[in-house]
Amino acid sequence: MSAHSIAVIAGDGIGNEVVPAAIACLERIAELHSLELEFTYFDWGSDYYGRHGRMMPVDGLEQLAKHDAIFLGAVGSPGVPDTESLWGLLIPIRREFQQYINLRPVKTLDGVTSPLAAKHPIDLLIVRENNEGEYSEVGGRMYRGLPQESAVQETIFTRLGISRAAHYAARLASSRRGHLTSATKSNGIVHTMPFWDEIVEESVRQYPDVALTSELVDALAAHLVLKPWTFDVIVASNLFGDILSDLGSSVTGSIGLAPSANLNPERDFPSLFEPVHGSAPDIAGKGLANPVGQIWSGAMMLEHLGHPGAAAHLQSAFESALRDGHGTRDVGGTSSTSEFTAAVLSAIDVVAAHQAASAATSVL
Ligand code: GGG
Image 1 (cartoon, protein in one colour):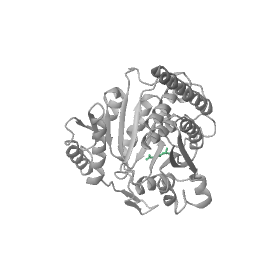
Image 2 (image 1 turned 120 degrees about the vertical axis):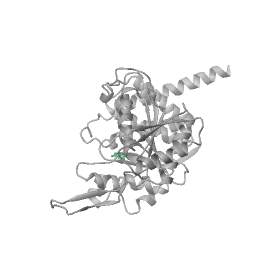
Image 3 (image 1 turned 30 degrees about the horizontal axis):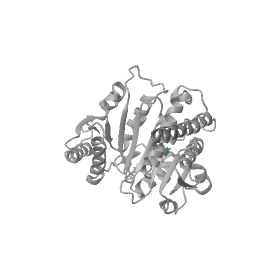
Image 4 (image 1 turned 90 degrees about the vertical axis):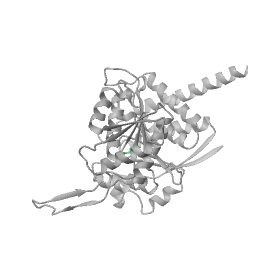
């Protein structure tokens, strides 16, 4: 029996609906694959902020460090400034635990209506640099309230930060179709982006089987809409990667489908798994949230914890629930969050029964 301790932060809004849905699926998978997943729940987020004036306790990171992985729902609430909700919880976790890769798969799923007219299968990975770049606390505000009021925000790129993202993305491309696209903007952003281009090129040169294309992020965004099936792996800075992954998942049908893994590849610290979407206060509490992004993030967590069979089982179960027409409203279906979750749970059992039957046949 393999045991893993997982810190769970449902957070805000629909995080409180999609996290329990995904945990129910993970518990069923754990039972079938003899895994011991021990979930420890933390009530951190915007409600906690309302009571304590901070998104997590002072020793929050120390508490999380004891776990093998972190499973996060969503953060953000209309009552709390976005800067507080993001910089008081998610960003410190990503940085303190050196989760410098944010891996975001984008894939066509049967049963999901795509807004695109051309229906070619899409299967790409976005590698978002996750620790630096445009997400920086360097800067400030001056002359508040006066006509000369001003704001300065510095972007920080380091050789280490760019090269480790580029190497990670190149290794992935090498294990797939061998195409790597780097998102740049070196025509307009004249210091940091040429630096990004140089380091990416220098890093990827070490992978002769990987063809690197550097593409201006505006053109890349247009191509993601016009011909997304031509991409294999995309490597992008923190901000560009965030924007491109919302676009990519929307092109496959809905941002509600999109999973992500905030990875510390060296495994010195826990990695964090969360859907790409936010807390969606407009639909929170109505049972409308699509739990696929959260369930898929759970499958990525199982893979990271060393259980590819259990991850594939969960993946094929939610894909089959979508294929059978059980999707939520955002993907063209009519199911509530709990109806879709019930469909995934029964698909988990159906897949297990098929696997057991084919194992028995191969023994005969
Ligand atoms: N699922 C986590 C969440 O709530 N993300 C919302 C968000 O604004 N994230 C910003 C980011 O990933 O940089």
